[in-house]
Figure 1: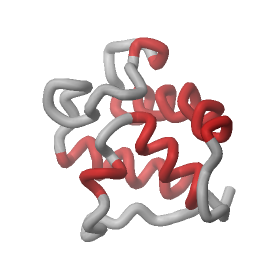
Figure 2 (figure 1 turned 90 degrees about the vertical axis):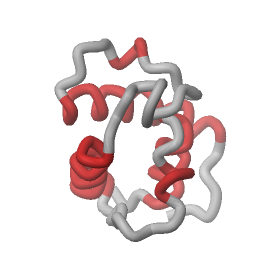
Figure 3 (figure 1 turned 135 degrees about the vertical axis):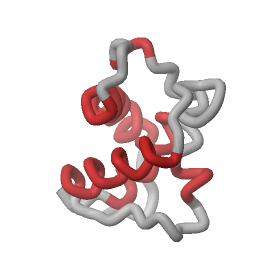
Length: 94
């Protein structure tokens, strides 16, 4: 677990996490169609709290760390695909 994820590590994770989001939530878009800067909630992908819970479970299993529902940083963590990739790159154990 590194203290800070490098831009290269984040960029390398983006396609993998986009595919994970699409497959975990059965979205009808391609992983490559997700803008890394677009919001995951609301006007971006339009995810809701149930989607985020499902996504957190899949991420926890795949990357070996817990995303907790009571984390005060969740709004920032799930603000965009890039923010999520940065968080995963920093905290992953697998």
